[in-house]
Length: 508
Ligand SMILES: [Zn+2]
Image (tube, rainbow, N blue to C red; front, side, top):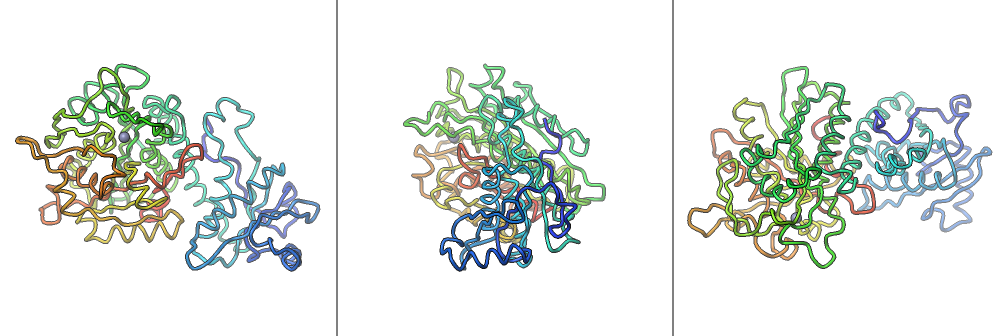
């Protein structure tokens, strides 16, 4: 396995210096802003005679090499991702042309902050090769030799490339784990991938694999795991990761990821052709694993980060959990199962409870608790390709949701705020005597009003975070991120949604 988690070499070059660019075999530009004057004169002439020049990728010969112009489509409603998309298209065209050493020329006065970074990340995203193809056909593991980058702001280029590398390495891991098929990225295989990916010692790793320990300490996770545990290669794992900063920590990030390696729906099986694509139900955990790589490379001096990847397969079989079972969570909440396809909230609630316990017991400063999950079809219906950000009242009072969305808008990983309300808590309250919570109703989330807000209420109550609300003596900020619509669909590589926002908000 590649140790740097990048799709190729990345090199800073100078367009105007012939020596450093002698290997370059193509140029890719996304805008005439920042374009070297000799290229610009060609582009200006081409625009006069080609009405399609600003809407299609164009190729021409320049300096005996291939030049590719990938235009931007900017208007009042566009955002920084246009630079990502244009660079991705431009580099994809260069690969098609057979280029092995393209030079990406960055814009010099872009419309948005972080447009240069998005241009680099877009180019790199076009170069990603899925892990199973890399492993099966090693000679195809790299699509090009080197991505050469030139920018008029020469003094800032090195820092920009370092930042892009730390983010891209994280995204690369998120794509590997999220995009691997249900066997390649089964829970035990995700654990060994993570162990091999983090060997610097900067991030400590503890893999829980004792199946009986799950029954005792993670009872909701264990319910989902029950059918899969009879097949050793599908048995659940909870992967704990931790970064301790060199200086006293100013803030503590506590991230819990849904890592459902395959979601059959369980006994409430996904019928009628809606099961395909369900290997992507681990993209929350995958994004967190990737974020930990960015943390490892960035080494924040005063941010403490703790992560739990809840890797489990929601299988169907004679051992599977079923609706009507009543199970007590780690926090002591008595839960009536309503639908086994609502397994993501089950997989995460006990680990979220452990985070809560640690925050209190270790008196950790300024905690931000998160769950990140491809949780509901409802989020896709409500928000399309955008991440839903659902703060508890403590996080909302601290302005978290707005800051998170602002960070995401800046860096090209946008989210929208949803609100968990009193009715959502009423909805999950069980009517049965001696029961606290109904895990889920019996309709799909996409046909349930407030289908993506309700699970946030469940996670708060099932983990015992309701005892740490705004009026309590130890209020805890908690945010649920539903990335069901933003994580990317089969067969495209996962997007790593939420990784960039978390990095922008908390690390850079
Ligand atoms: Zn499900």
